Amino acid sequence: MRTAPDDRTEREMLDVTLIRRHPDQVREGLRKRAVDVDIPAFLTLDAEFREARAAVERLRGERRRISADIAVRRRAGEAAGELQAEARDLAGRLAGAQAALGRLAGPHQDFLDGLPNLPDDDVVAGGKENNQVVRTAGAPPAFGFAPKDHVQLTEDLGLVDHRRGAALAGNGYWIYRGEGAALEWALLNHFLDTHRAAGYEFVLPPHLLTHEAGYAAGQFPKFADEVFHVDDHFLLPTAETALASLHRGETLDERELPLKYVAYTPCYRKESGGYRTAERGTLRGHQFNKVELFQYTRPEDSAAAQLELLARAEELVAALGLHHRVTQLAAEDTSPAQAKTYDVEVWLPGLGGYAEVSSVSNARAYQARRGGVRYRPQNGGKPAYVHTLNASGLATSRLLPAILEQHQRADGKVAVPEVLRRWGLPEVLGTTRTRAPARP
Image (cartoon, rainbow, N blue to C red; front, side):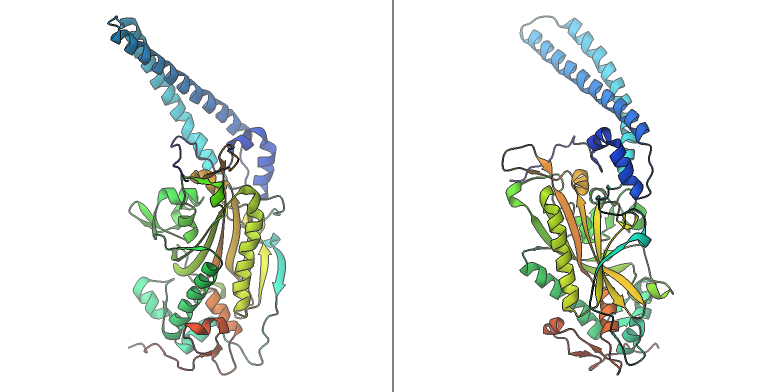
């Protein structure tokens, strides 16, 4: 059984009780992310906030008592003038107390909103330079010829039309054409079929979301300027943003957990390609396709769930015959909403390096607190926050370049991974090439 939340629930990014009881632990966790905040100042504000809130609740209780006494006197036909005068005086004091609480509530909530998640104990401090390679699968392909990068391959084989994509929508957009579009769609179908067979429920969420969804996912307010806004909605930057709010405000039954979802959406982001090798082609753009995995679990199950999600992402990459590695991100490179993240990165010969195709993250209770998602224990205990996890399963805009570059042949064609051929693709791309019409 799922029930709606109490609307009065205080929104928290971090457990405010943890900040009160273990401020040093919170400070050290934030320092891993190079985030330095004034915890003592917040604790002073927090004490004032709690005192003001208690005053409001106390005055509301007195108001209820007086209202009840007035009603009793009226039913008895007795005068209640002095009680009515007391009620008017109380109303003024309550208004003043509520105003004082309001002045404190804004800064109190702003402080909590600005805090990222605390990284797990085994997440090292620092930025990208401290990311740790966990394992490497296979070896980079060795070519007996001069290999092409994916931009050249897509142009030669007529797979992606960058010029007309830019003409339609501007820089950072492209059009998949012919076998390129078929390859993109085959990847998405393969991923969805694989995850559905593993017990993940297929979800097609809206692409336009409300601000509350961005807040619950931990992306707002910090990253509110990095999405495309449409009136009072925004275009989702990833299906995670929608799935993190799928049960917003609900109390789940423990017997339902874990809940496992897989979604397909385009992703819309304010980032675009450039002239650098790392940004060319489909590596970075305003719109790209992604299959997303998401889980709601009990707290004690989330660590194992993250490893399961990581295994799923790795298996997909391995089945495509791609050399890749797994990296555990350092604290500053981990998304603010996440406590721990593994990246699955594929080798791009044209880049001479690796590109992430899946981030596998555990937010622990961070998103659940913001979205008010709890579960009711079977033993009848107090409802607790669930843990949420997400993983790309997978993103295609970097995966397609890896397939083209790692599986290219000396004749300029590209071998298609066997697992994708059942979707009507040939064994080799370029056999029936469909070049884009030349520029007029």
